[in-house]
Length: 233
Picture 1: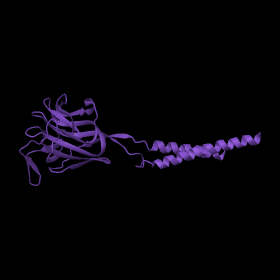
Picture 2: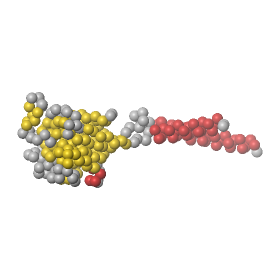
Picture 3: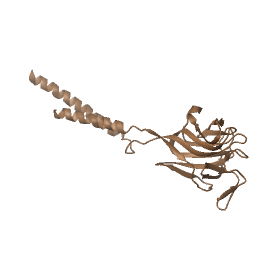
Picture 4: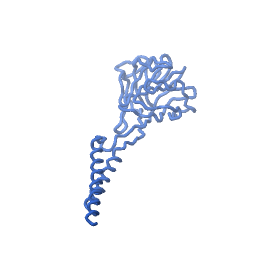
């Protein structure tokens, strides 16, 4: 094979490899909230592989706005819980409020904060029955305030795609708004865009340089072919 053809083929392989290696993919990631964290007035970080989410609890929201008063949050073998009552002994316990996410008194929200935009896929709740509903804010925009999960039992899973619309953001609030709603949040599954292999997208100048080199090789080969034809005449 002539040297020019080899160079052309090599450049094509490198350019196509560079293009496909920089295409980002997405993965489903499930965060399990059944760890025993105790009570805290701040955020709790949960991890799944290399991904993480910060979780906090708030109350005082309504059907058009998220809760903004920070309250205590904890988790146990059944999932995330919030406390609008009082905590004592260095947040070792909570009284004056049920150990659930509820709307008894001031409506409670759990806030999820990611370091990038993600898309909601599903959640699993415990302590759920037919009379319970949940609220969802995507960012600070209300999506639903009285959404039921059909059926009852110790554990239920809800798939968010049934809501329709845009479910992508870096921040979400899931809580209780209706009368007598209460549940615990066992897990949350989101779709997270993965970084390209190597973690970096090549600079545009790199792609332009390779493209220019490819075009230059093609022109040089064509010119060489024309000169050879002229000699043969």
